[in-house]
Image (cartoon, rainbow, N blue to C red; front, side, top):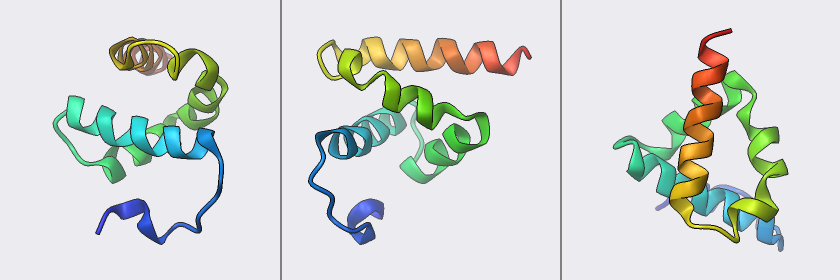
Length: 78
């Protein structure tokens, strides 16, 4: 069973895309989605990523990964 299957079904493309992006980003980072979600929560990335939905879902997924990495690096320098 996937980690997000217990979340109530919400008919929202943003929610489905967020879950997809989270899973794919975790694969990209060779880790698991709950670990990535924890990092995103700790650094306040979730609101940023949700705000970037329009851009992220129309571009290559790797562009989103690069943007998220860049943002995470910026936050780690603060």
